[in-house]
Length: 68
Image 1 (cartoon, rainbow, N blue to C red):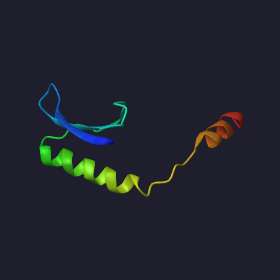
Image 2: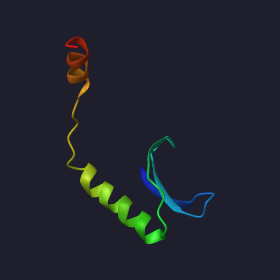
Image 3: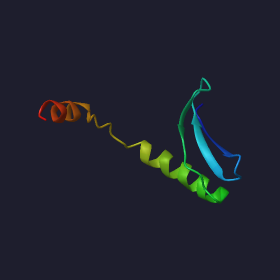
Image 4: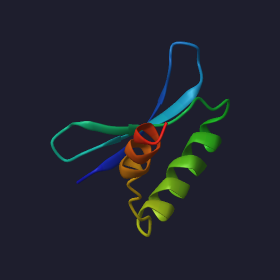
């Protein structure tokens, strides 16, 4: 089962990483001063990701580059 792992970095800040079933790290957070901040962020990502869409902007970039 995928999981959010809360940990402390070398500077003493709290972070989370999302780890897949196979152990692959698939996402990571910014640093938070408090553990609660990291936990709140992970919870928010969990909720938002369930309904997020994927937007592909690569075609727009190619079009802009070709129209220079």
